[in-house]
Image 1 (cartoon, rainbow, N blue to C red):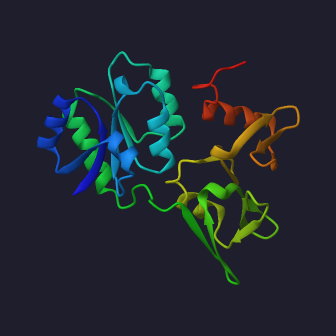
Image 2 (cartoon, rainbow, N blue to C red; image 1 turned 45 degrees about the horizontal axis):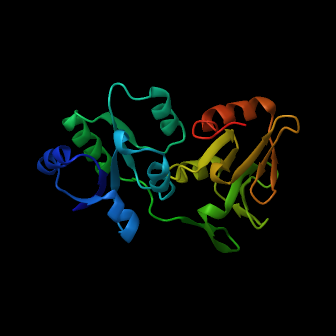
Image 3 (tube, rainbow, N blue to C red; image 1 turned 180 degrees about the horizontal axis):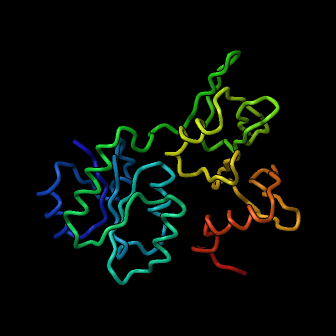
Length: 230
């Protein structure tokens, strides 16, 4: 039986219990007691005073189904999708659409990965790397391998092509594509420097990117959506 964390009203809970064969847990109990094996989360936008819960579950690669009204902020919801922080957004009174969305989610052969590590399996060595330690990945035309740069300055090489690596990492929503051969970890992004045409990550590592690509990156990340601009 699937486990779903919820922050929705009681009437909707009762309706969904009749439609779905799942076990519900309050989101607060999931956060307080660190309940493991949660398959998805349903959050109602009217109860979310900030983005903390959405951000928390998206960082853990747990799919978030967001419920909203027809009067809610479309731009804000669009930002969640751009940053890949939510799986779906549905009107809270559309019960059958909620059921359909969850059925589609759980029927996928590959849903959101629970693991937060990857294994580099090359001809001469193997390495286990935490996702949170990867700064960026890029394709090297000289070696014809995908380079994986980590926070400690190490560079690992994967014999797999960039397209294949990108596909395998698609379920990790922390990675954002900058150009045809580069993925960056948006959670480690610190500065976007248009004059120097570079990105600076936490720890001081730089990656040089053209101004046009930096502009697209800034728009896709919606950097100012939930921050105070000074």
